[in-house]
Image (cartoon, rainbow, N blue to C red):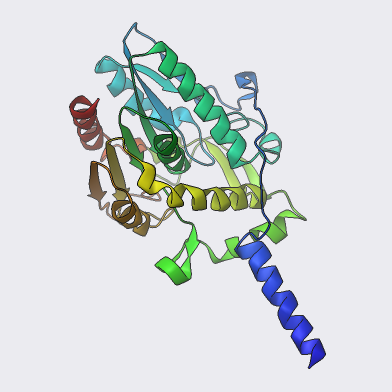
Length: 301
C-alpha cells in the first residue's frame, strides 16, 4: 500500500509539474535584433514609412516571420498608415538561438517596440496573428491601444476540464521533454510546395520546441485571466476549421472580454491545402478580410 501511494503521489506531482506547470516561472531577457542572421530575405521586418501620423504594428506568429503580412502591409500602406511588421529576435534565423528564448522575452521586446511607436505617432493600431494575436491581446490589457485586430488568437492551449479544448495531447509532456531535448525534428522552412492559396510562401521553423511551447502555454493563462481588462475596440477573426488554434478560443474571447468587440468567422473549404490559420496569407480570403480590418480601423481609430 505504501509503495502504491508513493507511485500515485509521484504520478500526480509529475502531472501537476508538467501539465499544469506547477512552480513554473520566467524572467524576460533583453533581446537584440540582428536581421543579418535571417535565413531568407523575406523573413526580415517590413517597415514602410511615409510620413504619416498613424501607424500599424503587425505581430507575427509562432514560429513564423513577418512574411505572413506582405499583402496586409501593402494594403495598410495604401490606406496611409506607416507600417511596422517587425521580426521578433531569434525568429527567422538560426533555430538554435530560438531554442534559448521564451515568450516573456519575445513579448517584452514587442511591448518596447510598441511603446516607441506610441512616442512617434498620434495613433497606433495593432494586428496580431496566432501567438501574435495573444501578444496583441496582452498589449490591449496593459495599454490604451487605439484599436486591435486578432486573427486565430489563442487564449488557451489545453483546457480539457474547463473548456473541452485539447490542442495537443503531447504538449502535456512538453516540460518534461524539454529537460532532455531542446527541439524535435527542428529545421528551417522556406516554402511549402505541397500547399496552396498563398501558404506555399510560408517561412519559419518546423518541428517541436518543448520549452518554448510550455512557455507559451504558461503565458496564455495570464492573458486569458486579464481579458476583462481590455478597453480598446477589438476585432477577432477566426476560421471554424482552424487546425492550429481551435475555434473555441474565439468563443472564449467573445464571452470573457468586456469591450466594444466584433467577431468574424470564416469557413474555408477542403480545396485549401493549409491549416486555415494564418488567414491574411491566403489569397482566397485576404482581400475580403483586409477590407473588414481597414473599415474597422477607420471607424475606431
